[in-house]
Length: 506
Image (tube, rainbow, N blue to C red; front, side):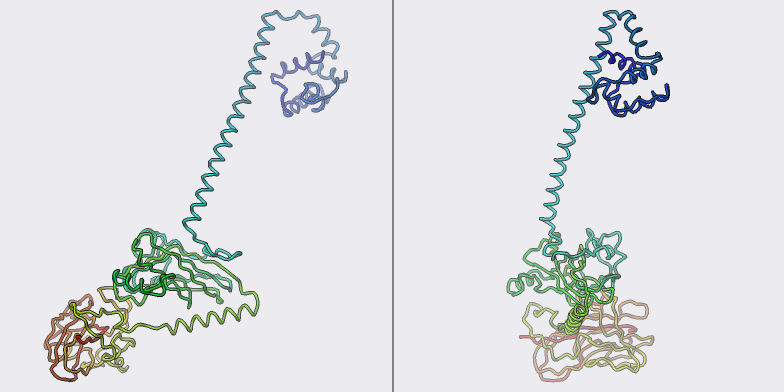
């Protein structure tokens, strides 16, 4: 085709190969700028063979010739026929350049294909890794296993639900102190604790709280024995005193005591509850552990909305559930003081005599002055100059308590009974126990005695309020008075006692 020479001259003039639609669009614009005549992009594509088509019109060839500086296509053709053909070496040079360009283009296309192939392989391998990781996480974590279809994850309304150690101040610590900062987990070794937060902005409905929590009593041997003989093995709540809660709804946490791995035994605990008032307090607590060495852990709180209350019937049903949970919470049995005290003393079997001490665990609180002293308790001091207070900041010693009778005065005591009880006993050997302390005006331990009137004991006061006991032998039936006594010359300004009890030797 004769006009191909014209195409070659245009490529030489423009300095670029016409190989893409953008090249042809660019050439069409340059032609119009130079000769003010239009050659369409489609026509140029057909001339260069980029698209199939017939022989271009002579008028089109004339426009392209004028773009190169000729009058028309015939002038271009005649002058190129008269011109001396290039020497063989010049032809060879141009041929070599064309061949080199063709080889380079082929190599570039090959490299591009290889790069795409490698990217596909890398993407496939990455997809496989992600799939395996997700499968393993779902297999091992099982954090949302058993949730009904259509639930909504509302964990986002909680503050620091993962219990990260750098954000623990968003939780509220009612008593027991702040958790140990251990691996981003709420961890407690103390008797009583309560860590919680109020979650706001909740639509009325039924919710589910999931917590990875675990509790292990201090006495592992006894816990293992009781667990193996309990009917509650499947749910793992034997002996557990820790619980997760949401408002009035509670769930004792699991304690699979047959598995003593304290780092990995964090089992899934599920609590379903109802919210009707926009907010609810969610937390982790215990108030019945008498042994300070118990270990309790909680982590990874998750909150789900199972069902919204949309109709009046929904509200009625959920209100009934909430009120029922409140009644159960209020009626939850509390153990007597003796239920948390060992039934062996000095290696000997003893019988705990529950009914001999009245209110030995101080269920009531004497506010002093004109208020009556708690039932069962007596004092020989002036009630107008002392008072009994309710303390919630105690977290020390083997038998810590958050409710105890406290003698508190700004005057020197008179010798005699500070706090105690009358007990009538038959002849025999008895053990008396209590948790107590006594301090002077400067806050240091001072002279006070835990004893029965007329009998010596080896129970000095303890500033840390620890558990102590002593024994006496009665040769005849009589009434005795047991408690904290202030000897003559004592400078007691403050003394406290709780869990007063008595055993009979078997």
